[in-house]
Length: 633
Image (cartoon, rainbow, N blue to C red; front, side, top):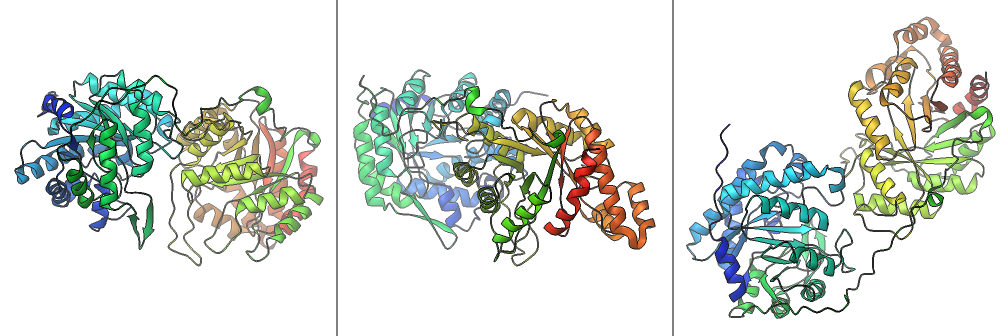
């Protein structure tokens, strides 16, 4: 295959020279304008370069008319990993070339001399997920996007909204290896004055200054005043020209659209102050519009950049120094969850969800199960769109009010953002929850709210990694917590999965990510389980809990076989249930006891988890004595 032709930057040297002699105005938010134009919040914005190029071009022209000298391509989030979330991960080159082409067309239509096109490059993955991608794959994703932007004819590259310094450095090294021309490198800082990854302005300025970029700066997250503090700190540790592109204040959601508080006049006043600190390129990020950029252009007209006033003093940044977590073995001592049991075999139950108006029932059910011989309960996820008490609340109630009964909280990822998920886990930990079963979950599609939609930022594997990070003393952005947690992390594996090889691969990855124990959904034969555990190569120290469920009759068995995904009922079991007739419940109990007895003899199985299709704690309590006896045979 012939090598792709790469167009050289149109005005690279001109950009560097102009930074030294004049204050350049960058454009404002593209996403804000697209959403205001009717584009939904859940759509891929870079894809609009292909499907709605006229809309993107019109926004570029509006910023040009407002006085922008530099137009950013609509390619933020146009890496293969981000585009894959919308099913277009294979169109990276097409999307980025189109982004550059549309920006150049807007400049051509404007007919204004001296305008520049900056190729926008964002982090390759959403915040906090970059560590899940191999370094080689991350670099390849940057290379793919950068090459396409250069082929499209950008004048410079603008790396923006990076929260992790190491990822930005990797991206810059890729660009420099491609002789990409002038580079602007911007990171995003949060309220404590550090990046999402915990980097201080001093660390950012020092590191980026050594890489030979044309300008360094900050954008997004903070409004004008907050970003002013960051730029002030950056200026103390570099003589490289600075850039500043704040948000228009904090956002609020009104009638399905984000609105921002900083008006153009206020925004423009801060633009002048950025220039006084050494900024040679000023513009806007989220919430800014052509009105903001017009005000900025007027405010900085005729100003000449001043070199940043570098000093050797200690940083005055408001954020506290990163703390080194205590990751010693003592801080993460063995949890003993599966130790000290009678016969060394655990008898656990899935605790039925109580009615919304009677949360106390969970405590009564848990007490009854404990009295019947249950040693551990698993609090399941929200399983219906009808009103329901949160699983974490149930787990806390049971743990505090039923002493001697271990509790495992099931945490699903579909209904929470990564930020909320982490906050909930840390909150549960603060109240004593230590054992968490990680599941992706499935949004309910029935009940009082049939249109309930799921939100996924991470799946069960990602949740395991989040918990492992907390146990290592860092949050999902890598920022030290100061003190590590000691979660015991559980993961699901399914012997009845339709794609056995995929289940093996996922099981291995879950163990590598940090799973401490494994649990299966209800199974009805053990040979496949044994094959799965052997294929995954589960270490001897990783406990496995086997899910079991009593069959009621043939109709119940056929329902599970044909209408419950990833569930398999062996032919001989179906035959026994067919022959059972009205004795179905007893035969179902017999099969359950046989499986429990056989499970104890299987290497690697440390216990059973009993669940009821009817959600009946009384049914489970009635089965426990027979299961306890079976497990000790």
